[in-house]
Length: 316
Picture 1 (tube, rainbow, N blue to C red):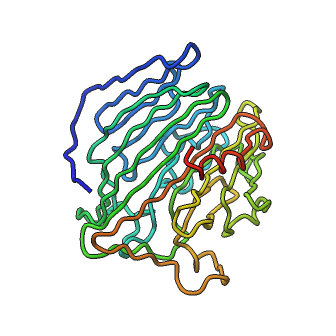
Picture 2 (spheres, helix red, strand yellow):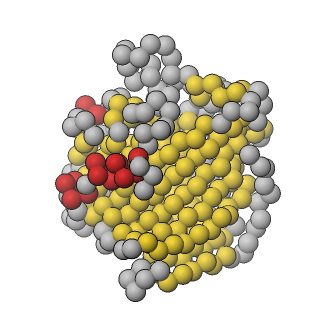
């Protein structure tokens, strides 16, 4: 993996009219990149935070699907717990013994953004970009990552596909067995199962629901329920069939946290698998993981998540 120097651009605007219905703009400002759909913010890549993330994520009708804290404080119905839960992000709580989930001295540094693309296929439009990242513990890089985001808009359904390829800087990197990780989202408060405005539910691909979905293996897990305007919404993360230890385990909490975690075998008390969830990545080796975030305005049934997972697994 190449180590690239960050190129600062005061403003990079890449725009294309993809159809009569959809226009996607990518607007870069230093380490941040806004994704605009028909001139309105759909999401923004934040590369100037301790851990890069996508925030906000907006619904088809313009409501927030992710919790706004800690970017915006004092939002009605929101809890100010876990300030490290930021939008949609990827990190892990034990990398060579370093806690990238919680600790301020562990950072994932955005070195550069690039490979900006837009495309149109049939009735959908997409935009993609890559981030070159360095996982730094106490200022020293231990892991290099190239992460590609592909955002697809198709009517009332949006996809954010993430492909992460990582390799160690030194001789070995170990991802430790902990529940604190890895591909994660924190939902808006109305989609929670608990709380003053909570009206949400959890369902996974195996039919397990709500609190029982925690620590279980599944191909996908979805939060579903009304947004702040009362409109039904679905948020799901899909685990690619070629990912490490597919189907993965899920750190799915009733307060709006959903994470796909292939490393937390013992942390999730899965006695069906022998040994620890520790995963060793040696010098010269790489680990590639693929996930799809599905956002749908409508019911769980109309989201057709199983159909979407089949398409995702087939490379579509």
